[in-house]
Image 1: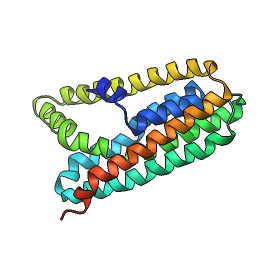
Image 2 (image 1 turned 180 degrees about the horizontal axis):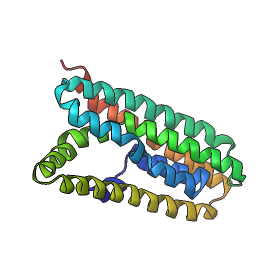
Image 3 (image 1 turned 120 degrees about the vertical axis):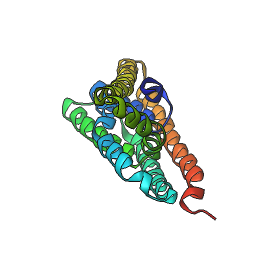
Length: 199
């Protein structure tokens, strides 16, 4: 499940690619590690609270997440106008810190982790815990090793291929990534609007 989630197209997938293009492997790898930071809150809230909340609360969360994803996509497209592949080490470190912050916030606001833990991950973990706490810990650990590991490998592949791009190709790749983020935001908003505002 973790490996499948790691390679599934979505906001974090696109952000890992964008971060690796912008800041190299470190930025992409830090973006890939976002679930390790944000999902602790997601898992705890899901297991303790989310199942008690009305369904429209998940819809509101998704709409908020879609706004942030759209903003990230628009910001990526605007930033693409003046970027260059030649980045000094200080700018790379700044890009890496920004990638981690953006990815963590995006993952926290995205409905995908919430829905996964409310519908699949949470019940599986609780069932495993009832038979053995070690099984539950192993399940969650294996899931995160797989999801983060596949995204780190993606970041490595993109960072190694950066040198094949010209500055123009790099700008175009960022614009495409920004458009994909905006499209993802629109799809999420359309999908979760009826949940947030039931008729």
